[in-house]
Length: 223
Image: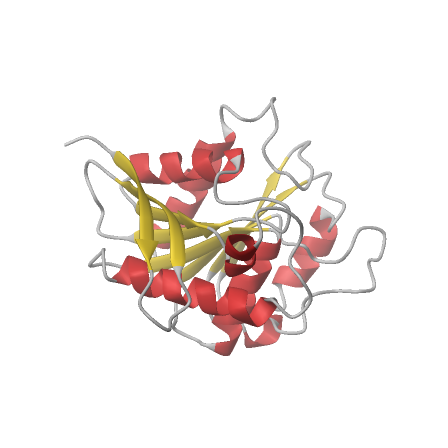
C-alpha cells in the first residue's frame, strides 16, 4: 500500500463542516494529526502540505483542513467574531480524525490556526492528546506588551512550539518565557533565520523532517 492523499469532507446537517485533504500513510502508527493554517492562508499552503507529507511518511494519518472563516471567504483575514466558530471547526476536525484512527489525536496550526487550537484545548481539556504550534503569534508585531497568553496557565495539553528566530510576532526569548506559563509539558524548537512564515527556500528541504522528528521524539515518550 502506498501513502494516499485525497479530498476530505465531513458535513453532517446542522454541524460545522470539515473540509480539506486527508493523508493516509502506507504504514500507519494509529495516530492522527489535524493541521490548519494561518489568517492569510488556507490548507493548501506550502508549509502545511510539506508538513502533512512528512508526518504521513512517519506513519501518521493527517487531515489538513480549512478553518470555517476560510470556507466562508476564499481570501482575506478572519472577520471579527469568527474565532469561536473556528474553534468549533477544529473540534469537529478532531472528531473526524478520531473516527478514522484508533490511536491518539493531535492538533496543529500555523499562527492564527495554532492560537485557536490553544484556545480550544484550554477550554476543553482532553479534547486532543497534544498540540503542534507553528509560529505562535505571541503578540502583534512591534507591540510586545499585547501578549496573547492569558489562557496559557489553563492549557493542560502537552505542546510542541516551533518558531523562527526572526519572527516579528515573538522572539525566541519571549517565546521561551511564554511557554513556561503552561502547566503541561512543552518544548520549543527554534528555526534559525526563519520569520513568521517559518518555511523558506533555504530550509524547505529540511524543515518538515525537523518538525516531524521533534514531534515524534516528544510524544513517543508520552505513550
